[in-house]
Every structure is written in C-alpha cells, then in structure tokens.
Amino acid sequence: MRTIAMLAVLAIAAGGGWFSRGWFEDAQRLTALEAARAATSQALARESVIAGVVEARLATLDAHQRVIDRGVIREIQKPIYRRVCLEPDAVRLLNAAAAGRAPDPTDTAEPLPDDAAAAE
Image (tube, rainbow, N blue to C red):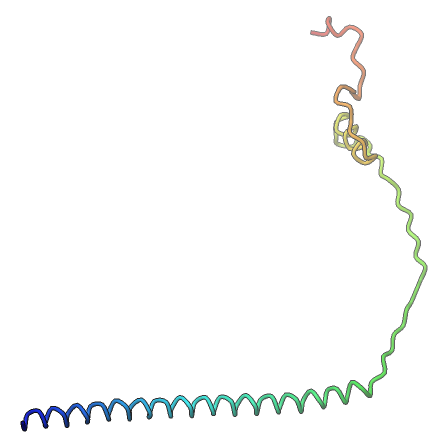
C-alpha cells in the first residue's frame, strides 16, 4: 500500500511540475509578445510624428515648374549607303533595308557580262 501511495505522490508531483512548467513557458511567450507589440506601437507612433512633420513641410511648399520650349526641329533623312568598303551587293541590301522593302535575290548590282560563257 505504501508503494502505491508513493507512486501516486510521484505521479501527482510530476503532473504538477509539468503543468507549472507549461504555465511558466506560456508566461514567457506572453511577455515576449507584449514587448513586441509595445515596440511596434512605439515605432508606429514615432513614424507617424515624422510623417506629420513632413506633410506639414510639404504643405508650405509651392510647386514651381517651368516649361522651356526651344522649338528644335530635326529633319531626318533616310540614308543612302554608298560603296566605301562594302561590295555592291551589300550596298544594295542595305539600301533595300533602309527603304523598308525586301530585296529581290535575283537582282544583281552589276549586270552579267555579254560573254559570260567565254569568261570561264
């Protein structure tokens, strides 16, 4: 009987310790949450004061804006490429691209010689 009573006392002590440990941890969590809320509310209060000062300063400012129109007119011409260091076929392709049309692949820049068969 003593053994059963001793085990019951140990079980009650262990259960009480477990409950008290849970209450202690909950109290620590609650303290941390309250500290975080207090820090957040202090930061928001500080920032709202700063925002109020900025808004008051902006309300006193006048917006000055100047529009300067110098009337610059630019005339854009489509470039015509000339042979400087490009072959005639490359110049023909560039001119066709500048004009916005697809070049005819059978059109050559230089006509074929009359004696093409004899040239070989």
